[in-house]
Length: 556
Image 1 (tube, rainbow, N blue to C red):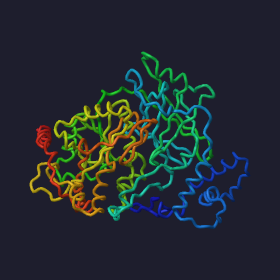
Image 2: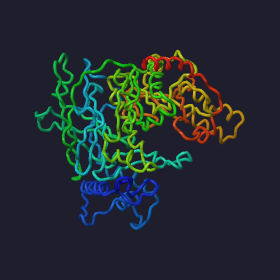
Image 3: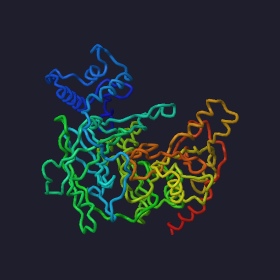
Image 4: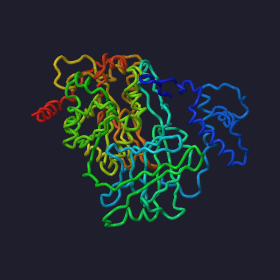
């Protein structure tokens, strides 16, 4: 868990999954409060504050009855202890029918109605709850069953210099990049609370007793999603046929639990005009160092946008870490093709921005806010776009070896949805592209024309080589989602919202991601990670003349 020190330093590490030796004071205090509440609910005597047991000892006592208090547990056993302890710490679920309805797919509000956060253009609302800072990155009101629900996407961070994060350092490819592959988590203590939603119109309190329970989940650990029911009067006003005006909604999260969490100051949701309906839109991860990419392959970003426009993507939301992409997207944004979210880590928190851009280069964590960007982007397209494609950066280009230039994403997705009506997520594999760089390429598409392929490994390679090559093809890499029926997104897949909704794996001959591994690298990543890209594949060149023509028309 990196903590900020002096400018240019990351500070000291308080702990990690590999060495869970201490917990931040805030998290430990919250867990201690929850432990007291748990004991009180069962009639057990409370410990005096001076005798409150620290988190590790409490977990040992709860989950490993009979273990010596002084026993030193391995990290794996500590994680098991935590998993066993959480069900006991969490209050019992209230009786009654579950909600939001677990089998109900999401539906748009009637008559083109749409709600979004009433924040400045940046679009993130920041509130405090005790010593925690709550960052609301997206919000929506939609129909689930017969009732409208407010759904909030948020994360909690401590108000000190610490950031809880996961470091992806598994495998030889990450040996020298343990700082680079770091992803911020929300504080897990927030998920142990029961929240109530206080929903009202500004300045008009609802009758006593209308504070309703909230359902809060975090399937990924990176963000939380809280669903709130509207009081009956406001629900009727939001759905009223022919209403000339819609009410503003003011929402506070009220914790039922420890004193260390406070009721959050209210945030507002405003009715906004719904933009023209789109069939397919796209989200990127936060990118960085645009100038370097442009020097390596000039016009790569514009060509990437234009190529995917040829496939039927109508709008793009592009994030960056450092503001460097602004000059390259300015005209695209002016023409309404791109929504640009620059300095994304800074939008969430100054300490995110510091870790992403201000520390020494080898210690920077440019991916720190990737997961929050995916959730914010997908939620922004709810009730606006039928489908959303998630591609991480300009190294990744959709390609259909079977359809080539006749590929139309909207038609293809419509056909797949008719074949699998319950589909909410379509997962795509990757085809690593790299190898020798062409001597006179005209675009990125003709710069690297060799793919990894699996034929040579399956036919003549060792079993280990064949397995490794197949792993690069058969695991989810990118995805396409129905934004209204996704609860949370991840780096390579997403979680459907309702029971019975399907995640569908797409055969690579139908649609895949050409992943140009060597773009932006000082070495051959294709060689290092996959054993080399050697199979010639120029199928994607059908589009090169067209994207060059589109680029030249814009420059005139």
